[in-house]
Image (tube, rainbow, N blue to C red; front, side, top):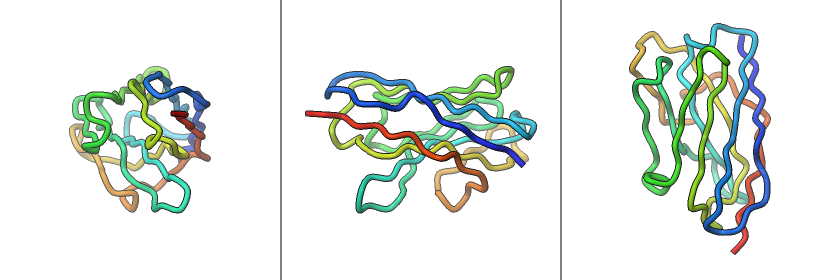
Length: 127
């Protein structure tokens, strides 16, 4: 069973950048496809970005394409989310999530696909 801990959240002005990190422990990290999801106040949790267990495939929700980049370092058991050109509507709690994946190229886009979750990191973008 894998444990996930996010870091790197904070307060930033619109147009600024943040990088979220998610450190994994307790499992073989390279066996897991990873994702970032977020939940804004009063809204349901939504998919943001996903990466396959090898890092060869990535996918983004339309609203963050061209601004956010997901990556992973399997040697360091860490997945990242680089967020540029941040907007106030990106304000949310961001969650790192993991699920076992047989295919090295497959990723997952639904919150229900993920079995393991971090505690969340608050990202606040001021206008």
